[in-house]
Image (cartoon, rainbow, N blue to C red; front, top):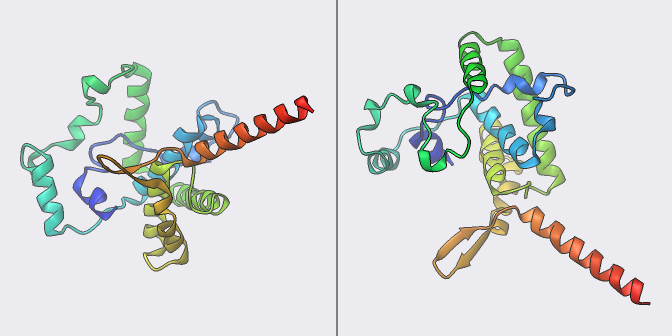
Length: 210
């Protein structure tokens, strides 16, 4: 996790993740509480890490990875100029003018943001992260937000905290060894729900038969 925060451009190359959006009234259509659950729960810890500018120390391994991953020297890349650059193979829906305007406004806000509002938003995000972790026994809704939640807890409480250690204990739940190597299974809780629904359906068929 530390390597990811050091190798990639985390803040400079992305539009503002605007943690204060979580402080808006929930009645607004744009409030995260109205988003698709996976989108919301991934945005949650990402906004926390963005707001805290989470990074890690550069190590020889990090420098080697930067050299391997980028075709030009890392320090020569103007990441800020590529905030809206998307690979055409991954561009399913073109960015709208409205989205570009909103991104520009939140990017501008980053330069003059309220320290009070930012702290309040980040405190709320961390409490929400802890709540999801505890309710799901540190499995969380899927592998993406599980590991970003884990990163957030590492940043907030350190690697020796009980909550971070609880996260580490649940990592094997997502891993499985396939013929072509180690993989991470997606949406573990969804698989559990499908199994429960199947069992409930089978039980209902038995009751109908009786």
